[in-house]
Amino acid sequence: MRVTELANTMNTTPDTVRYYTRIGLISPMKNLDNGYKTYNKAVQQRLKFILSARQLGFAVDEIKEILSEADKGHTACPLVREIVEHRLAETEKQFQAALLLREKLRKAVSDWQRKPDKAPSGHMICHLIEGEVVDVIDTAGERDE
Image (cartoon, rainbow, N blue to C red; front, side, top):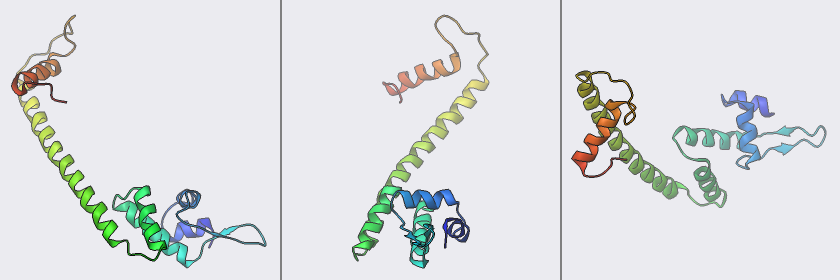
C-alpha cells in the first residue's frame, strides 16, 4: 500500500501518514524498483493503534513510549494505565477549575446586569472587570490568578 491508499484505508490524510513516518512511529518499506514507500498490514495495524491513541488524547511522546515497550516484546498495559490515571487526575483538576470559573462567570453576569455602563477613565478601562478583580482581591485576600 502506498501513502494515499493507507491514508484512505485508515480514514486519515496522507500528511498524517507522512508525519508519523517522518517521526519514526511507522516505517514503510522502500520498493527497490521504483523507490516508492509501501506500507504493509503490520504498519496499517500500528497506524490504527496510533490514531486510536491520539483520539484518546495520548501525546505523541506517550505513544512513542508505549510502542517502544511493545517493540521490546513487553506489555505496555501498565504504562497505558499509568498515563491514563495521570491524565484523568489532570482532567479532574481542569474540570473542577472550569466549574469554579463557570460560577464566577455566572455571578459576574448576574452582578453586571445591575451595573451601569461607564466610559473609560484615566484610572479604569472597564469598571465591570476591574471592579470584579478588586472584589476578588477583597474577598480572597489575594489576587485570583
